[in-house]
Amino acid sequence: PNANASDNRGGKQRMAPPPPPTNRPIPSIHDGYTKGVYTQHTTSKPNPQNPDHTTRLVEGTPAPNPHYVLENGISYLVTLDDASNQSTGLFLDQRPLRGWLSSQKLEGTKLLNCFAHGGGYSVAAAKAGCETTSLDLDKKWLDRIYPQMLENGFVDSEEEFKERHDTIYGDCFDWLKRLSKRNEQYDIVILDPPSTSIGSKKKRWSVKNDMAELVALAAPLVKTNGLLFTTNNCSTLPVAKFAKSCWVGLEAAGMVKYSAATSANKKGGAAVATAGATLERVIPMPYDFPTVGEQSVTNLVWRL
Image 1: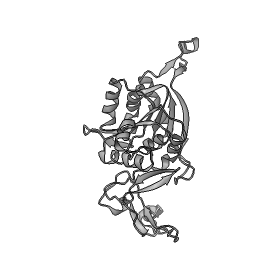
Image 2: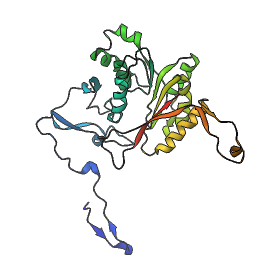
Image 3: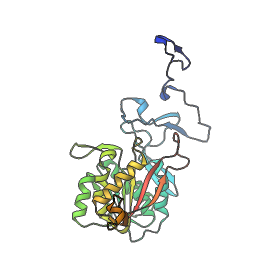
Image 4: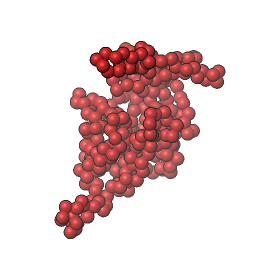
């Protein structure tokens, strides 16, 4: 429809809506230096049968599928043409966190990567000398982690990979409980859940409703003075509400200690947190990540 078309029915001026973004022509950026150009349309309700909901080649020649891309000196395995899945295996908005992990000195430390997907965090941490455990409910993605470790020279064989790195196929909620019963401890725990998903018991959960429970399960696995990374992938959840959910989870896990009652408290004043978990870092999107409006905050880092 014409965006300038209007009518005057019922005494009210009505403007025809602009065409949806997917119907607008995409300007060519294939300048001879690129081999090919792909588009990826994101939607909250992807339909693999709809070509507009899949990653697809629009110009140039197809990329090998899968293939490696280079980021901060590390090779990551991605898929650009998978009609059954919107994901490439590497989320560009988390580039700063991967860069931070790979730049640290993590020899002798252990990392738990929950909702590991293609294992980007695990691969980045391995460069820094960290031993990793990657947990996900999709074995297809977990199977990509060993080839990436091998490609980067972080391990020389599958035997060495199994000695230093573990992959767990299963539901994160269930496995966090199991790991806690085993008294497992990690220097870094990463919670990077999708905005909503269906667990192993076919029960739907969401970051909006269940982040506090997830944090409460993960926090006891973090060593004293360790780090808990929490990621908000829900575009409709404000960072303040996300942070509050995380704080509620930390309280439930006993990670927050409050001051004794004072005269102000007795008169209705709020208690003051004096020990335990602290919010150490707030990580926004990369400055060059395409977004509408102000850059949103996706990662909160807690020191436990």
